[in-house]
Length: 488
Image (cartoon, rainbow, N blue to C red; front, side, top):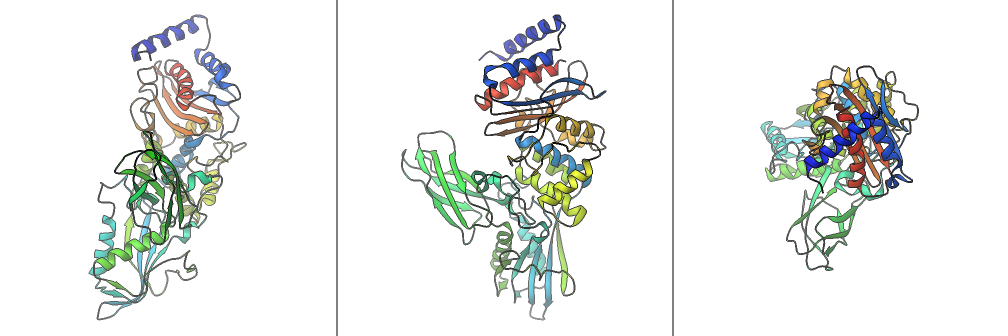
């Protein structure tokens, strides 16, 4: 590979030659990419606009709607900031149902009412080893009230967000993996399970050493083999609420502890179990164990009216902090959760379907929804169809929003931060591009803003589907266009 400086100088020479011929270097670079042999059979949607006047700088199939992977998160994070506000915090509420007698016995149940807080016990917001601290606070609160025993159960209720499990268009290959954890009214520990494998010589079976958290009732079928490889090539399969999980594929040989993350089958019942376990450890006896509204068919029971007392409200992280991690680290669960919170705030229904309905209602006056097909909030759905024009229209609207600065701060910077750390390193675009990236099998996408060397602020979106080469080779093609924009 050429050193960074040589690559940059070569780019400048090419760019200056194009300018000397009186051509728009960005459009020329775009045309060159579109006509390259690696693009034969590929779908390529691109648009760049000057935000000072909305004029087009360059384009290619700008109105073509195609799956874009994680750049779809730009819609979810923008909508959450606009509708919920940067300082909105989702809540999880603890209720007691019944009364506490003189002996400290709660004659009734404890209810956990989920409010869509996807940051509860999250490793992204807690130092390692402190993810469970919130449970200790809950237990201390209940004990302070004088509760020594419970005649009923610990019941978790995430019903206000529905039980669809996953959004439309998610692949079976994704569901059991940590990045395929679906949105829910109750989330805990990022809805993820950490499995630790011990591997042997190449070709031998692997062994599960531990898993965290413990998932009661789950059956794990391990078909993962040890192999002469350096990376994780294993896959975990399992649908929402299914207590069967299957692991296949390969892991590096002769490792004493190799971590693989999967998704929690039923976050609602998991949180009820976690609180019940902590209470029992603290000496609080629970006569009827733990339950979940979905699993135990209690939907008509939780009314939170007469007989219910709100005793504690746990506040999650602020939307601006969630949105920043969503875009910086491309966390699917957070993106889906933000979308569901929008629906919950405006209608009391925290489903993906309701969130998308409210998203369209809010943006329809600024963004044309003709040809725009959104099926989830994270971009994991291959049923999504978004064009470069859709993205640029959204980005233009956010550029004049009161949340402009906060939105910009959520975006990774090329060569500097988040998922763009490796983009345009040592090239013209380094430090000038603020954007969300998107990567899935046969999909490469970027969308965001560019502060060009000439002082222009540019909105752009570029997506390539079915590139005839590797993901890194597709990125190199895209970098040609982004570097041209950076010095436009």
